[in-house]
Image (cartoon, rainbow, N blue to C red; front, side, top):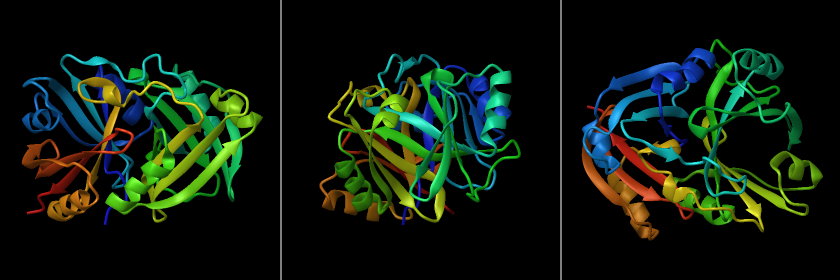
Length: 307
């Protein structure tokens, strides 16, 4: 059973600069780091030899999912979301939970980070939420989230990443069904949000609606998939740009206990699978495959070698 996204891959222009945010400011742990080429990942991503210069896997202390795989390429392509409109399709945001958001935002601003707008507060079902959107390195978008009353593991600095991976898709119902049928994820939340408040917050035309589906497990607060659709609006499709060696948020990875079982299930659903077989990467040995969601997000699936 798959419970959550294991990690999300982000292309970075300068790994040390990216780590200043994720480990220096947010206090995440460096789980592993490797400088120099990674022939296994170069095979997995159809890259020429020597294109990977440096990489690190970072995560919230105590969390086993929602990690970030930061990769510095030797000759990167431009950022996936450079110049993107709000409604453009593709990977969009990384949700980072925190405590005492006003204090966290003040700390970040004192260190040169900026926010798109003041902190907003709203209700989602029975949850009281604070939110602040922060542009980060390589045209990535970090969304600080504080859910008052949540008991979630955070770093000593007061942050936890990534709780939700936000992806803009043309149809959340189709996309959500894909994650349920192939990965067995549950639909945790489904909302259609309308009105002046959301139009102002997101920058939508009058009369527009935002549809959101949250996929994952109730018991797992990290590594959830948040699917967003802007009803009646379709921006540029940036999914084809979200591939190595581009900068910015690219794709995500799931782990499975049985690659044979996953491939059989995918093929029974008519989902094309590219099977790479045994592969050795920075993460260790394992069997690897890749599929694409209906919208076009690349999803890598690994069966780790646990010998």
